[in-house]
Amino acid sequence: MNLLYNDDQRLLADSAREFLAARSPASRQRALRDEPQANGFDTRLWQDAVALGWSAIPFPENLGGLDFGCMGLGPIFESIGCNLSASPLLSSVVLSGSLLHLQGNAQQQDCWLSATISGERRLALALDEHPRHNPARISLQAVPNGDGYSLTGDKYCVIDGVGADGYLVAARTGDTSPSQAHMSLFLIPADAPGLTVIALPLIDSRNHARLQLEQVQVGPQALLGEAGSAMPALDIALDRGRVCLAAEMLGMSEKLFAMTLDYLKTRVQFEVAIGSFQSLQHRAAQLYVDLALARSAVMAGLAALDDTRLSEVERQRLASLAKWKAGQTAIKVVNEAVQMHGGIGVTDELDVGLYLKRIRVAQASLGDADYHCERYGALELAHAHA
View 1 (tube, rainbow, N blue to C red):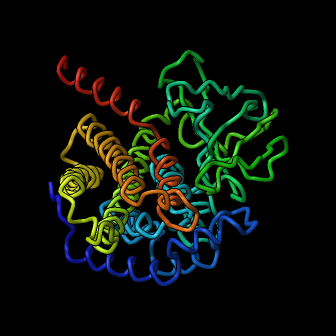
View 2: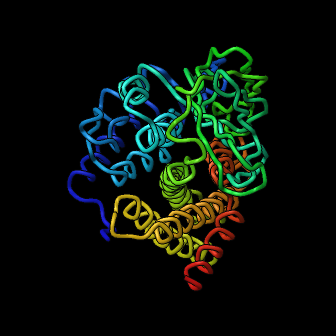
């Protein structure tokens, strides 16, 4: 397993860093927050990112992709985190695009995946039905009838749900008891009768939505794959999303660390730079160690997504480890950044507060620390008894 970016991936990292620093720095996110934009991101910036090939990175060439692997997404999401850049890369490409690739038929891929890669259409995954992420708790039932299926229920915290052209909705087509069995995915256009999309404001000011489905009728062509067979593909797509979020949090953490070090070197108190205080030096040194460990976990998670030699359990464990470690490190780094900056650390004048809000949401998305600790432990136990 390679835990270092290769030459091509480093070039991609340099390109993404320069592009986002020039076009979408952290200050731009403050403007997006204050401007009434339903999408929550700059559509022109997204089209330019598509032109750079970002939306094609993980997909095979026969589907219009670059076949660069999920490892190629790592540098992009690190740069996204570093600059606090908002885009539908996670929701439309990593999550929804992966599900179309893994579970969709040729017609669905030709109609929706190609348009997703080209940026002509945008998809969002409608999964969770509770404040905390847990795919096993999905209870939305797709009731079969003569014309296909009828869906009635709510979906919460749909990432980039406002303004999407369609939704991949997870629903049960069998037993409704809490488990990962009988899970199906339906591709529902945004203009489907009975579907209502409501903006769901969160502290990071990004695009989140709540979906209300009231007897939404879909035909059999809306079903991805066979009924009840979606969980393996959904599990892979979610792990990809989790590791990409981990890379984003790593990018935010490293940027915050650099900002804090600069402040320690320039802020003068008692006629000396506060960075000369030994207690602050020790705290900064500990953050440096935590960041190194987080990077190792994130790189292992990225590599695991592409390594076909690994078992499914090992991929899942490394994905959960990456999400947990990056999330815990990000929270520690941003808390220390606020403390070391003092009162100004929580003012809107300083970018630290923007990173704090985004980290809180990213850490909770697709499973918080408790969820991934429990998941890792359950996988470890299952592996030991295998």
